[in-house]
Each structure stands twice: as C-alpha cells, then as structure tokens.
Length: 140
Image (tube, rainbow, N blue to C red; front, side):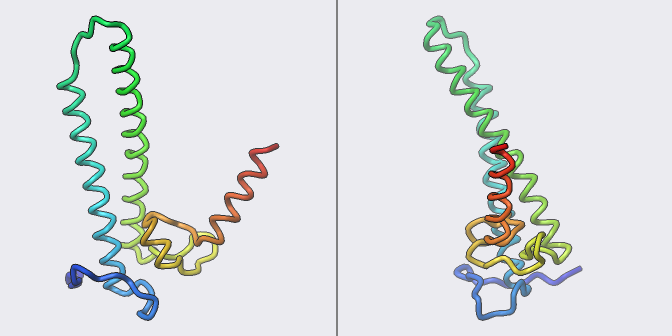
C-alpha cells in the first residue's frame, strides 16, 4: 500500500517540478474525487427534489413548464453521469501511472490544461487535430 502524500492546502502543480510526481498525482486525485463527490451530491439532491415535487398541477401551462424543467434536469444529470465515468477513468489512469500523458502522442499534457480539465486524455494540440478531423468528416 502506498503511503499518503502530504499536500498543503494551497498547493498547485508547477512546471519546475518533475511531471506527475507524487504530489501532482495526489493533487489531481483529490481534485477528481472532490468533483465526483460534488456531482453525486447534486444528483442525490435532484432525486430528492423530484420526489418532493411530484404533484398534480391543474393548470396545463404550469404542468408543461414543470415537465420541461424536469426533462432539462434529467438531461443534465445524464451528462453528469457520463462525466462521472470519465472521472473514474481518470482515477484509474492515475492508479496505473498513465495520468497526464496524451493517449495519442504519449507526450505530457500541460499542467494548465489538466488543472482546467482534469479528465483530459489528449494534449491541446492532439485535441485540436482530433476536432478538426471530426469536423471534416462530419461535413461530408
């Protein structure tokens, strides 16, 4: 079992330290776990809110508005469910020592990109190439 890595509360990964050292991986692990917990908590709140708000609304316009709000909330929760799967995948990559490296080029993903999008699997350049190819094929 790996010893827990100590991190100061104000720690931020820096370019001048070894890439994906123990402190950086622990920083991203904690960031991902906190993000996941926030999403799961929001989901629990949504489920409870939907249980509480189930009621018969006589006005058809009000009922339609509430149904639209519910559908939007459920779509949001579905996107977040997919996001949780990506967070779990990133946590697996941390455990396997593959986190932070581009799945296309094998090069390190910039710390700024990982801090902004901790589930990133490609460097910015590889992502841009991927999106350009996707756009070209979508236009066909």
